[in-house]
Length: 362
Image 1: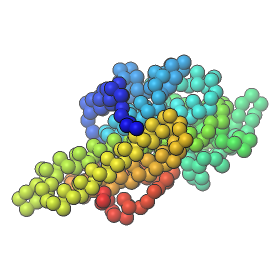
Image 2: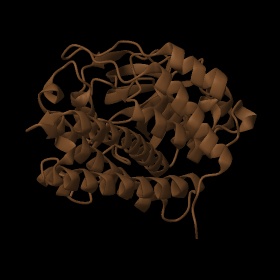
Image 3: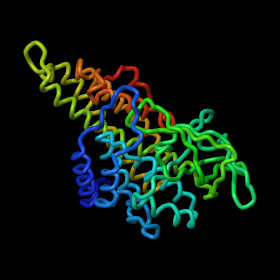
């Protein structure tokens, strides 16, 4: 069987790439400064000109009626530029969580706003005690007449402080259940990855609307392949940037890229990123099609792609030399995002080769 993207999917990739490339690379900020907002212009252009937000949403709910695979193509291209827009949290995680409930009323109320880009919706999932668990959430829900009240604390909420609506996974009647918080109180936190905004959500008798009981494994799988795609996009571009820099940086009167030892290291990095890309595509298709190997491939892709990106990010810092350890260069942003990616949504690790070799891709 030969897997290949269609002409339409390749064109989608090209359109998104040209759009984000016009905005340039990631914004390099002062140490420990996390942006409160995001690039509203790119967000609007992706929604209005490309229709990227609506790709994986059914037409009956205001979407384009395509599949998760097309959405993941966009995620990969946004990853190339370390884009700061809330696409992962809102368009991927929140939309898929709502769809997974099977609640038509919830879909009709929430998905059109996500599809148009008019609403940013965040999914509050992780907890301090349980991490990104599949079940057993410490956050609880109890019925209060016509509504529900939530109690607990959620952490690592992607774009929680910027969201118009926050969805919460909580335990109700012993089952993981999805709720829509009526008036969320999210507090922005400073994550390791300065290109990604996170928040904490404190819930104390907080009114909420019941949405349904989604299969949490589906959300786990979608999160894993989305992060894999994002990591592959970033790794590919950072490797290319590193290779170009080795052609300009000179030592002993010649470009360092001409040294045989560095050629070997860069070749190993190329093999790592291409292997990760193949696994990412296989997992993306599997999760999109919801076939029997979806969960297995998603976990493999998340682990392998995050590890490959970390190794390439570390290698890039070394090969950029002195400038690679300055705040003015984007090298540290890649290293931090790559390190954070190994932990985000849980640690489905296949091995420790990338970490053990301190950045070596081989």
